[in-house]
Length: 272
Image (cartoon, rainbow, N blue to C red; front, side, top):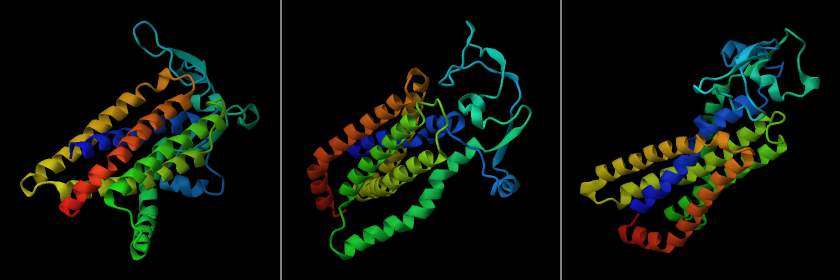
């Protein structure tokens, strides 16, 4: 159980950056302009924000949107255009006083639930297909594949960083959608399987305690996610931030691979 809890911490540390680093990416590094064809519907649904191209008091930032602060740690203000326009190409800037309608940054939080709804039937059908062919992997192998796929989601963001030249221009929203799609596949392979493993391997009198241990590992992973995200500004090239995440997940993936024989033996003995 402790081995399962330990690897779960690393997974949630990377996965839960949807509310930290990936939200920062959506806010400042992603092209969120709403296509004119869907703008009326998006406005009715209340998922847009309007940004006017006119100067105002805004935080002073560098090319990586890091806020400059004075000796009292207060943000330094400057008279400039809204930060969204900082990495918009000059030929795509609106005229003075005109506005752009953008998808709200917060909507990025809905991409993962969207993929969960779409991909859950696909993953379930895939496992059922393999089961009919007597090729369905064991629970522990599914957890291994979940970690391997999760590591690939971080590489999607590495590619996105290079595609937008480290934020010098806006990144396509499709990079973010793709990254969420890949990590959701990893989540669907790993999270239900690990939770099932906890319930099956726990001694009956300790099942509730072990389930509490699972949720404790989740909370620790959330905390570690915040620690990792707090280092975002320390990376001059954001690809390095995502590569650190990739390294953490891959090390854990290798550890799981080395433990598979041992874990499979335990699972077989307990009939999981």
